[in-house]
Image 1 (cartoon, rainbow, N blue to C red):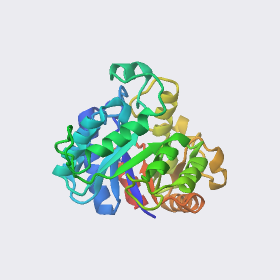
Image 2: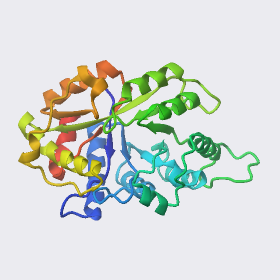
Image 3: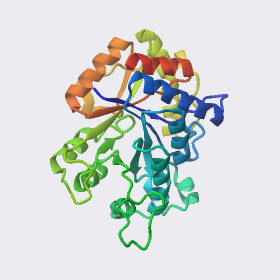
Image 4: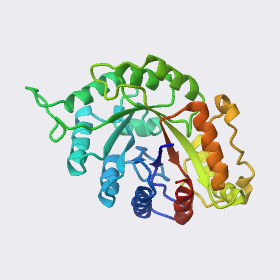
Length: 323
């Protein structure tokens, strides 16, 4: 089972962004030693509990603190940016940290509508814009061959692209282009099964393909601790933050609460089709059993783990147990 880390650089209650970013680099260093394959950070804006808005800068910070683990974006919200700028940013990262940079691409704004407008993102829905932007971005990584507009650095560099999604749309784009597909089952699992099935059945080795067979990454929330009871208690922080986000009032990651602990439900692989998100909480054995069952059901090539734990030492322990 190939495991990787998705980190949101969580800002805790009474904490700050500087501490969150230091903790992200420290987590990446530990993940590298524990054998995780890659460490991704995500682009979100106007979120008081997430410090990874300037995603390319955070990737540079994490990559500079590590030596071998792949580091990348999970992802860059492409409609927020000109494809040329993204190519230049990730061409720069690849030049600084050769062979270690990934570029995951999403089409959501990663924020609320008013903040999306502040990002100068068009609010018009154009289903063709995202695939066109991906193709334009791919063209900037092609070797220089009389192009009028070049990404410098970027042209001629091999930066692996991944299509992110929480619906069938992303699966269709990834399949048509022959790119790896990462599904956000850690927060939006409702269409996970049909999306993965669609991607695998329609995968095509296109002229821009970067792989020759489907490659699926699935997101999973995991909170592991030395006992099931301790893990349930630690998981209450993420439940509070997620509930506030759903209510439209995002908050910093709060400390765990006994009041919220009772709402943590055991993972059941037999009900995957109905789960709003995939979460596995418990001791090392409980988490291992849950991940094994999930892997048997979904057959992912890779599992991307995100752990919303308030205390940094407890979060490190979670990933250590998981490894």
